[in-house]
Length: 277
Image 1 (spheres, rainbow, N blue to C red):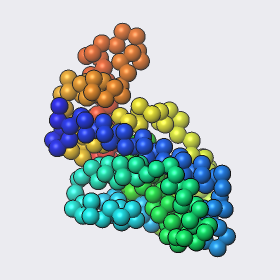
Image 2 (cartoon, rainbow, N blue to C red):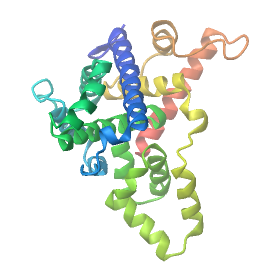
Image 3 (spheres, helix red, strand yellow):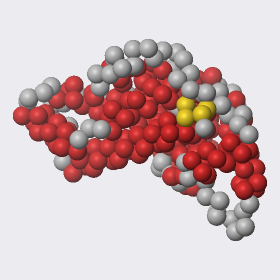
């Protein structure tokens, strides 16, 4: 079963790479928490990455690829619709980093073997990719797209801002977000400030369920491949048979036709959400 240039096995590989990448990020975070002085000595720079969210996603990925010496691998990647493919390659590369490399990096920073500032910047760039990728899992769009929506203003801007803050509170450093917060302060907009504080908690609720994340990711892949208009049978085969990320036993007695219809509705909702971003 193929979806334009992608097959179901391609999508499975991407999902596997995403899991490996998330595990690596968790490992990095745990290492930093356990020994923060190794990663952030007193005289090191203080990294920030919010400026990447103000770039188009293809430029963001290209910048991060340069950090991990993948310029050649992604040399043909530009302002095309193949963001998922490029991200998959980058995630696969980073996800294959051995666990010992992180500890070695910390030792080399302390011993002065490598420039600690360059190492910290590499971690910051990786974090920016992880956060925008996590946004794709949770909300079905890149974090960069949410910031673009905030910049454009309009009725969806505040919702996009709060969603972005939940994923990565450092987005407050983006000019559009800072401008909106400043406006709220000047207007004494308590409702906005309360929603902002709630968003800062980072709580996502039921949206943070793993299979739901994977389903949104697959829908984004199909969207970028121009293959969202699949038949009900094709949707069922992909999500249930091929990938196993839609549980037909969630409701007792759920028939194949009911599951396919639910998947169709899910695809329609995704299309509507994409049209608003």
